[in-house]
Length: 308
Image (cartoon, rainbow, N blue to C red; front, side):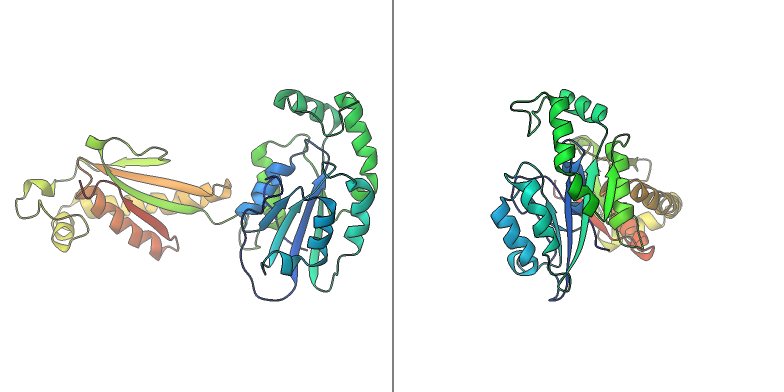
């Protein structure tokens, strides 16, 4: 079976991962309006799929016939398509049956929800149903359900999102389509050093204050250096609290990171602050980066205030 999609971005390709020449993994996301196709598409985008939404039927037919060539050689593609495209209900089943299964591994993912849920979602979003020009929203939902009955029968997977939150939907997609070794996309970890005198970094998920450590700033020959320099690291390494703090923070992060990833987080920012953001916090971030790397976590590093 194939793998996951990306977002509802109005016929605009968004992202993709180039792959070797060979069979293309193609996930087609369709279903009832308001059932969560945009959310599911974003999940596939997070999983590295090249995502396209709402192509006109002639262009969709060309893409389904030659997905590898028309998508620039990427190996994983997700397509969102539904009744917004004129002629979709009548034409798409035949286009789907005609896909070359020897060159393309196809999964048709159909999303649906209860009528009550869909009516509530359209009411909350204040967006019109694609078929509601001459119909009430409940009538449009019922008509669309009938129009897509054949397509639902062709689906490889059906997700009923009636009772799912956005987070539950993401989890279902990641578990159904993510790599077997993990349940979601890789989580990016950022370690940021900063100075409290310049303000706290916006958007920090975790923050630690290391101002209780002895400050190299008050040692004249160390003042012009930074926490990346050997003399600073030696100075702090001679302080009993520094190596112990490194161990405690490293153990805490190594414990927390997989648990955050299991919650389908795609990014986690860890900020470590000292007074000026040049010595203690920088040294701590650099040391923690090494400890996390030893545990299999590659962290990006930013020293926000090191040049101040």
